Image (cartoon, rainbow, N blue to C red; front, side, top):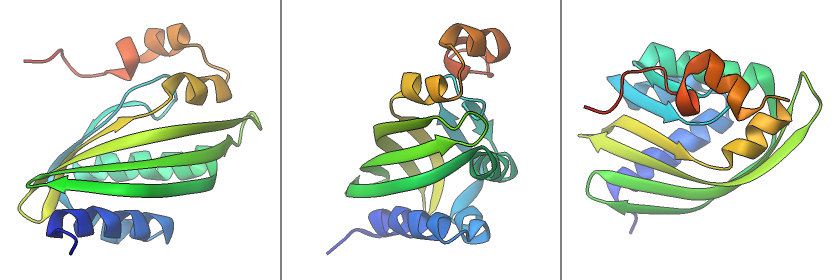
Length: 150
């Protein structure tokens, strides 16, 4: 039997795939922290449900997702890890990227309070025709726009 935490994350992926961003938002805490390192325009750290939704809308505007498969979901208490693969095309350049990914979720109660994405950030940035150095000049190291760890 799948854990409650794993089912919450699995449902978020289904809702995102269906375009139901309201349901995705409802699964997050108001102060959710979403971190996507790398050199893509949507990389960086977003804090708050509204900022995360803006990021999802930006992804849909900039990228055509051709394949997005969650192959496995692992859960232990308040941590959930989703492992999968993705193929997409950057609309502005027509370039494709492929990557395997790991998404790490932290839950507080029945809501997602933090998400950290791990993937092939070089492949994604390259599809946007951006070098990591160019993106770093715009957003800081690895797309980080917040102060260093405390």
